[in-house]
Length: 281
Image (cartoon, rainbow, N blue to C red; front, top):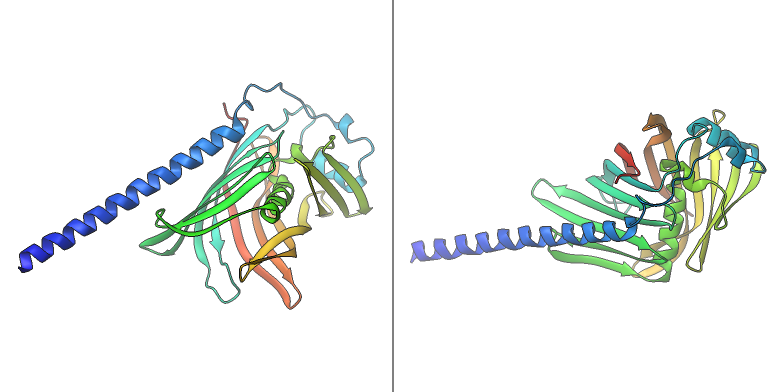
């Protein structure tokens, strides 16, 4: 009887492990399909080149920023693959949880796919993906890549996603160049507001520039936080640090993100960029 029980338990364990492995492979397959969807055509798109002539008429701190992070004649960024490590917490009372992630961007039509894995314990993980493309977006999280924990979509998430694309642009600076769907407005000698439009949505963010021309902070009021099942519009800020030249572009390699609450700022993410690739074929 004991032997039979042990065999049943062993069979259940093996079945569970196989289920988790298969679920994880399916999750990754979905991510790869979504990456192909947003980056389709970016490699073969016409090559455009950044020149300092494009900066005429821009606010002073914005001009200084571009001259600091980009070289005259550099090819514009069409797509990005970026790897991150760091820590995350969902609530003020939560402990910090290790995080590893990859993020993919398509620049011409603002789009991204973020694929992350949180490790709350050595033997458990939460696999997550956030997607935004052509004005539509969603986010999903699964325990052990298999068991649904959360799913979110809708207008508020899509506005938040577009604001996220804008605020993360210091990692792909040519996306901040003025064009029909992105405009700049000067505020003072160290800050300017950018407004981006996509698929009927429009969001803005205030960029703060240091004396050396680097973007040190990005703030927006166009992001929503889910609180007890209700999405609330809330101020949000990212702090950018430790600029390094990678693949000919000077970008921040550290970011700290926070919600700006009435009772004080709640820092929820601390990330480091470990790898960046532009315009992969």
